[in-house]
Amino acid sequence: MKIGITCYPTFGGSGVVATELSKLLADRGHTVHLISSALPTRLVELGERIFFHEVEAMRYPLFEYVPYDLALATKMLEVARLMELDLLHVHYAIPHSISGYLAREMLRPRWLPVITTLHGTDITLVGRDHSYLSITQFGIRKSDGVTAVSHFLKQATLKEFCSECDIRVIPNFVDVNRMRRRFSEEIHRRFAPSGEKVLVHVSNFRPVKRVDDVIRVFHRVRKETPAVLLMIGDGVERSNAQYLVEELGMKDSVFFVGMVEAVENYLSVADLMLLPSETESFGLSALEAMACGVPVVATQVGGLPELISEGLTGHLCPVGEIEGMATAALDILAAGKLDEFRSNARQRAADNYSAEQIAPQYEAFYREVIERGPLT
Image (tube, rainbow, N blue to C red):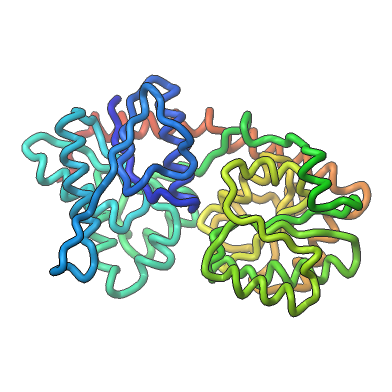
């Protein structure tokens, strides 16, 4: 198949999944055309079957805001025509599903199926804003196929946007050959020279990630056992988190690593991940940690209970339960327990969320939508 894929080119989960899916599909013999404003961060190099088409939105004095969604629709149409695409697969409802719809309508009478994958905040945050509610509903309903990354997200979409929509759950996945524990003595010594336990947090540092809770949980853990914390990622809450670290006197124990391409190198020296999010539709960072043999202490929200097996691969706590999360973390770090949690975490990632299991589900869904034909 010739597949057009659109995503945000950032470190966020939707961009990561779309990029990894592109590479998987190319490895399985399909031709993939990535259509985005920039080359996705996880795509280190293009291949014989992966092509990139940059969306360049015109800047004009009349436009206070650059009309990226219209430029994207135009580029989708151009690529679909020139490359004879079989379908468009867009990740994130706003604005990508709308741009895909416009491209499909401009291409008529030839039909170009548009599949939308919902990743989370496009539904739980952006879509619920009244200014975007109707357009989000329209984009979902006009898609020829819709997938969601968790059962939680499917139910939230059906409840809030489209009770009659047919939504297929295809979970996020991980390359278990790449994402596995490769302990680096050099990296470990850099952060934990005295053999301290290594806790880690990975996110885009948005308010919904509650990074202050990460710091406060670690502060309590550190009182009971020697430990360091790696904060991987960047975003608007980073400066607040750094200030809190200074306030609590932990500058020598908390390291803000920033954005990293090979996150598995850092996960491979970690003993535990902290993920105290207010909401998580799936929790891709948690899955990547588990694949590297890192158990997770997270909040009992969204799709996380589908991913994390309580008491086996980690612990789940209510949002804002600082003391509870610290106690849960110390339980996993206790002598004799950590190795079992490590093994369980890796096993669950490999058995249920490997790329080899998930890629065929997307292929089958593509063929199903194409064979079914237009809905309208």
